[in-house]
Image (cartoon, rainbow, N blue to C red; front, side):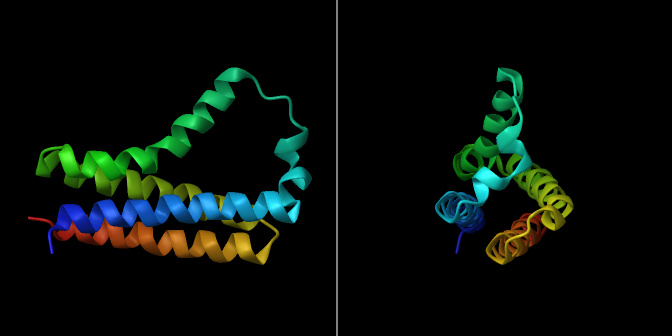
Length: 120
C-alpha cells in the first residue's frame, strides 16, 4: 500500500482520537473541572490552541500533496512534536479515559514516525 495513504489515514486516526477524547471530556463534565476552564485566556492563546489542533487535520491533506521528501520530514517533525507534547501533558489528566486515549495517540505518533522514516 502507498505510504502516503497510510500516513494520511494515520493522521485521520490521531485527529479522531483527539476529538473523541474532547467529546468524552465534555460529556463527563471533566472539561469544567480543568484549571483552563477558570482561566481568562486572550484571543492569541485561543488562536494558538486552534493552530495546534488544526495541525493534525492539515497533515492528512499535506501528506498527500507535498513532495515526498518534504512530506516525509513534515510527518516526522509533526508526529515527534505531538508525541512529546502529549507525553509531557499526560500526567496532568486525572481521568483514565484521557490517559488511555492519549497513550493510544502516542502509539499512532510512533507509527507515523516509523512509516515516514522508512519512506524512500
